[in-house]
Length: 520
Image (cartoon, rainbow, N blue to C red; front, side, top):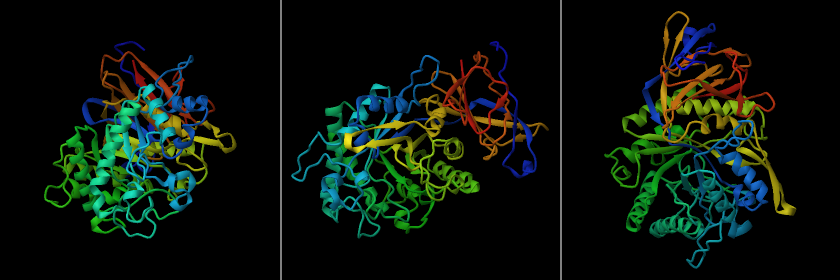
């Protein structure tokens, strides 16, 4: 391919719009370098709850997991060693481990707490998780987010880190709001001092809305009303300002996009979170004037990924509401749940492209329709459930184990490895064989989906998902004469095609595949 030749490949895609619903229509995709949609901040995943254990396994297994998750290096064959996550989520614990079985939380989902009953701090706690903070930093991760599912058990109303026996309010004693803020500040300062990790972001509550209350035995968690959340954020903001802590405070990691837009399956006091926190006339809950609260909403895409009309529609509604208040958006957590029936629900780990493609479609829709500036998966390592990028096989008798990769890991890598922090998403226009333009993003959610990006260094990235079981011709162009050619990386059903470099391209997208085109 010569420098002055515009790169293009042939595509046939079914449009998901009524005008083209009856037949496949030849499409040509054009990336618009001047039409910037949003800036991408990061792609990430969390350490919950596996790194408590894996972080103490053999050095070999720790390094393998860390390479797969964080590395941006290539092996001798030019294949990425890992997916290059650019943000790491640290689950700041509430102390259910120390309570043992009386915590009313399953053994595998308990967390330690830095704070001791006498008010002192034990900086030997959460050691496995902290080992992965270090491994992430060593491999180039430079964004870190701490999140809590519950305040420390010493401050909660029921003395537990789970919401057993309570209603829909924050599990925090009325006289402990300032204590909680001091704990958060102490934890951020302590990890920086002892581990050299500065948390860029902190979310003081996690999934406070929705219809669930995390009643044990399951995991740490608490609901909270918007007024309670605002009070915690204000107290924490005041304490951080007093100490000169630069960590940004995020709200509010909603459990469902619909809770951000209305009062879905909860009362008004836990719904409408976008307007509650960022509309100035919401006097009791407005936090948009706090200096360390960015104009940014965080939410989880659970329960909104099916049917396909909802997958697109809820995200369009979300984007419109966010735009009204001038807010950016981070999708900070998702995995496969029971309503994701297309791939059999969440039970049973899936190494195949079935889950990988399903999640790639969610990523595409969150980026293209909701204009998400960040996309973060739930657990980096899981068990026999569709919630881990890697599958852990513990050997309890040896206090060790091993991890295995999956197509899901590498599918996320088609985005995270090449779309780097500071990249911008670019508009993509499709034109059919009759010369009719198709609105940006309106490609077939059961066929071909295309999104495009320009990194801060000027390089372009185009991600093409072929959800169908047939090969598809692919044709796109980027009108920029600085492009000499494209390197291709593909994840597919084919054995060994795990973000694998593609030496030659015949103009066809492989069936059930994700292909990333990287300019040079």
